[in-house]
Length: 287
Image 1 (cartoon, rainbow, N blue to C red):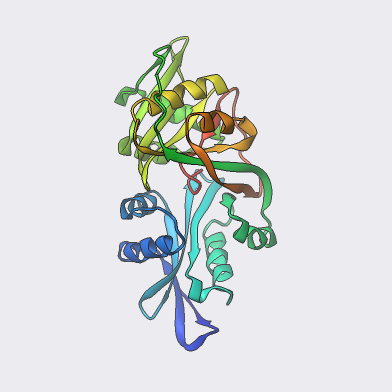
Image 2 (tube, rainbow, N blue to C red):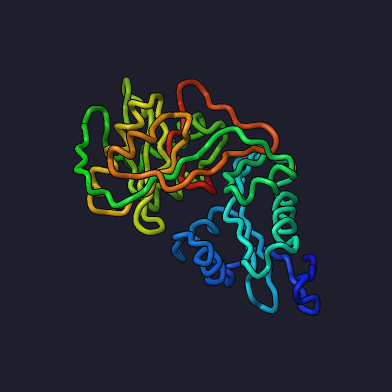
């Protein structure tokens, strides 16, 4: 544990410590201050599958940062927040440096808002892509094709985890199992094998569709449509990579672009295997 001091109130120590269950209500309040639509359940899920640090002053949470380890070589970072009254005094940098210390030895990926870019660049992160956030009330009637797509069963989990690893280039078996347990999963079969999957689960203001991994953009669209066909009238969010060209198609379904983030990496990016490719993110923190 380290102790720092707020420049506006030098008599009150700021403690950097591990995120614990007792911090989650305060973390929810911080995300609400930022205008992020997280529920307490979303924070609980993130903490269950990841690790976190917090800044606490006089028993009050003033900052959070989380990471998720994938094997020995990779990690992602996200949910990095510092309350407005504590910004500008180096607290964000101290919090993020603590996170980097916890992930030392791993290549680290994150998706940055415009506000975080300068800090991340100073810490050695480089940009490699753009993530587009699409969301809205799903009012367009979506018809699912049945060609090769079906609901996943428990016996599919190992194949889904293996496909996810090929699509991401890093092992995320525990995360994928937790996401599958929390939501509904569809798979697409090609030549009798699982050649893609998509998960839809409750998140934020409604539902998120993602991850979605497939061997072609056409298959990714089929998987997304299969999930959207069950979500008519619901608020839906999907985060996709701009480079894959799904943005205009999502807008045609009524899911308007509501934001963008810069995909960054410190170290080496993971490399996908074969045709497997990640088209929609679990969220911008888990990637």
